[in-house]
Length: 333
Image 1 (cartoon, rainbow, N blue to C red):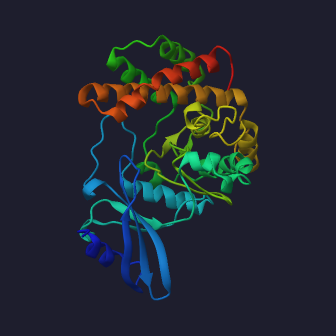
Image 2: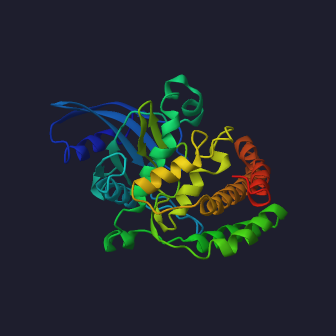
Image 3: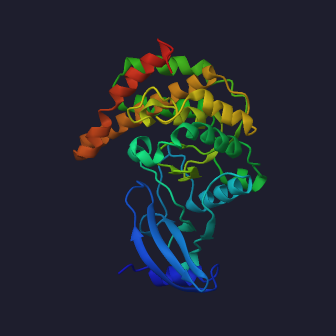
């Protein structure tokens, strides 16, 4: 028995007045920081497939000083602002209120598609669309970065530019007192290159496999906006091109499915700025460094709790060192 189901049904009657019942309520796997529930709203006119994105147990999420994640209600505001600008994202139906008695979260449309990288990169049903995905990602990013940041939206979002991010990860790295000479090299290489940002825009913050809903027709939506912020738009471009998100298909720079020129062309043609491959390389270096330090954090977690999962991720910091050598010394994207 799902204890909040009656309260959810009551809350949704505000936005779905013809709602009869909620059926097929099922918690989905994945999502390390939030609960994700799939369900059907049975209404007089038919069935509406929906998703509930809720904080664990409905309680406010406690974040550390180094976290840039935003509250779920802010996520919902950013999604709707992006949808209004033509971004492919699920429609938000209802933001939970305190008197709903469910906790923090929101309800959005459930769209068709796949988020698992292994399937997207290898299953035959995606063979035809795979060559078009990089350009589509570029188009989506251009629209995200063109969203008008109103005073109301700006008041809700953190401003996290390149130098701020670099200092944050430098502090995390120093905290562990576990020297990685390649990381030191990357930090020094990045400092002057990230100091001169040309623009500040809305940034998705985690635009990569797992957060992209892809069907045989193409990219259906950008998901999981919890790291949305105001910052350098090149961050999103570099993150999806980071080798760790290619899942073994290294020759395809964009998510293991596409080529960087296609991503940048789609970005430019959809109204984004002209971005050079060298500018993208700077942020791919940052993405590899960031993931490497995140892996270090996982290892520190393993030291405390001996989790096999944390150990498996923690050891991958060595992979990012190889990536950084290729990117910085060999100049190979």
